[in-house]
Image (cartoon, rainbow, N blue to C red):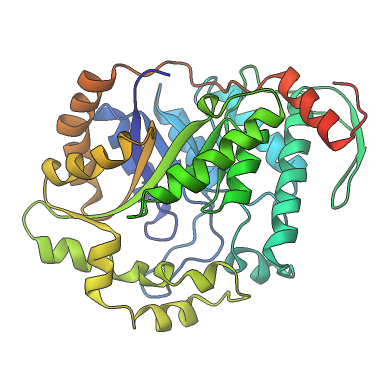
Length: 363
């Protein structure tokens, strides 16, 4: 796999709809490869927050651009979005923007599902649901009529009449070994977050990807490694860059990713107890390209090849820095990226998965 895809995250919690589209257009204008969209109903904080329906933003951005790759980081296809609706939505966008879409999925957070009237089950059930949901989405993308009755979801003679013309890469997001194994079994890419202890990748997550991949006749090397990095940026003022990240402090409390907590005010209240020093240690704070390149090098050496930055502070300034200084360096060292962007997960891999799970359906 040649090249490194690099771009930005359109943070639906932090910016208005028009601003998100503006950032995406600027990203392509400055030569970036990708625009991920955070897919939330409620934000992680309450003060000056937003709650944008990101699928609309991706469609708008696709219309206003020509080549930037777009996807979610991440969609939860378990509750408020049932799997067939996700399959149809992304198939439609891939028809509109061929070879430019990917689908990032995960087990979700309570702050997005509970306000919409759904209960919040434990992680084990959510991971089982995610596996079944991704399987259903892949089934429907083949464009045939499907009847399927699973543990959590069913299809009754369901058919997508406009299946994707080019395979849509699926990114499964996780920070744990069970999610990583699932990515190996059903995804084209494994999406995760930065951690200081890189043995978590090399000794836990990447081996789990490989185990899952081998179960369906693949290699862990076939699975793209993608990374979401949160950065505070201001070209003139380090302290301003740091303080721009403070609203995100609630995301540094891992308990909120599993607990039945869905009120942004409550998350913000507890997040405000996290010190600026911890924010500085966990997130990237940058005033120029040098810090960004040094930070990236650590993860590129591990094999990450698809990276997007969620930017607080000065997003357009960061986009220009990324496009003018960081992206050219990446292309010089790692080569150009391939276009169109399409997954390597084949019908044969899905058939092998079905055999593994004892599912008897014709593809």
